[in-house]
Image (cartoon, rainbow, N blue to C red; front, side):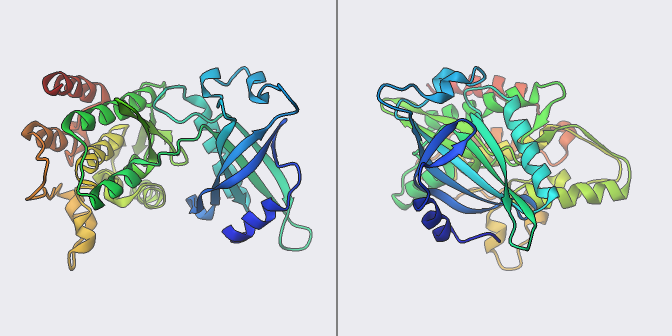
Length: 347
């Protein structure tokens, strides 16, 4: 679909004047990631870009946009730009919804959308028209939580107890902002790969939840088998299986779904901050292992040998969030009260 990643780089190298997002120009410095296989076949690429200013002493054009928090304006003029190739109306609506949802939130632990543009381009077939979307975000070059834990694992390093709690507490703060909306929103794909990490000397890392392409109003009433199957099909496309709540694997024909689908994913993510992967990842590797079965039964596999060994309350905390039945799963406010107690105890 679209042109190759190397082909896009060559294309941008040949462009004079950079890429325009509304009234602001950006020069592409290098790719950050791509191609990204998105929802319903939407493909995207993420680049590191630098704002091109009009002349000596010119100020960033982004400062003119009153909706942008000035603290998000880069001193170096560098940002992350996501380019999305759109080839049909369904994909266009998905991107518009991602832009809408991303624009709703304003919280230090949620990645803000700074600017965006959707342009019409000539399609590959005679006379047809496609679209391209450009989404501009602050850049965090330390990578995501998944990348960081994988690098640490190769060195046989792990986050200290207090750092685990500090990273987790920030994710809870971001989710609380979403869950306390009216109506509440669920992220639907909380996982280490969607958590950016910014390291600061002498201070705990900053954790920022990103990628709101799967975010929707959290509360849904399921009143038929057809609605249940539709939800399951949607979850298969939008929610990573190792972090997906049981009710999204096998939804009853009569169910009230709410934001506690994220609490399950949050419990899996806490486990992953400690051990580098979801507590259900092992099902992929074991012969004949069923991810769905292990999730539905909450069959958590704890490492038998691990250094450092985390305190027993950590295991109890994870188990508390990984309740298979959503009605007994805690809400985000309950989680925050508990994690604050743990931070006080272990700091």
